[in-house]
Image (tube, helix red, strand yellow):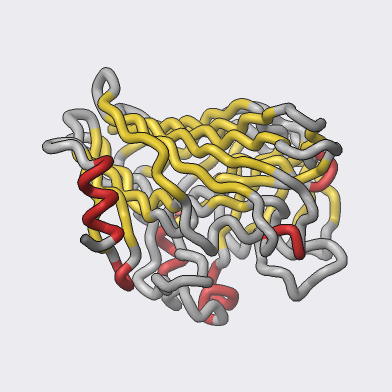
Length: 301
């Protein structure tokens, strides 16, 4: 019996969830419920698809994404941990950390009220300690229902405190990024990565995309509301345990320079990321657990 067959035998639920071979031969969970359908790759615990019943999918996936071991999947919801972007003092370390590059274990799959509840796990080992010398356990709770409800738990299983960064790097699918608006970050200070890390304050009520945007909004816990007139829907991203929100769109030039991203795909996506980075990095004492939660919902117009 193959590993996929063993996982399917142990965790598959007829009419709800199955373990199958996905793109690049990677194992994935395919979930179908009355409320929504979803696909989750065990590689990186990567939510690659979420579609509420009667609506179009909420997540953008690049057609150029590389589905293979040791490479991140482009689009959907990658998990960034234990650092965000390049690792300070070690630019050779993998961008956004290492947990999105390896396989996670399935801990449980169950029916929920209107959907499915999935728990995936990961933990430190000798390889992770070469770049992040800490003992930890991760549990990723994925609730598939009328909304996509994601909770990343980080537990310090060691004997000393450690500090980490994290993000649920959510790629949202939009009809045309140039015509959307994002509300919820007015009067919030941010670092603009496209402007030599200048610190600025969001003066306008609405964020629009008319150039490359890469902003790290600090000290904010507010929800973001995305209006997408082209697809006729409002997407709300709520969060808990997060003090950073990242808004990103690569625009024309950067998209062309990314090998796993189509030249014109930037028009069909925007990232609204639930995170804790830089000054909002998390200090976690021995034996303690931190929870980062994102709740994503779409309402048609």
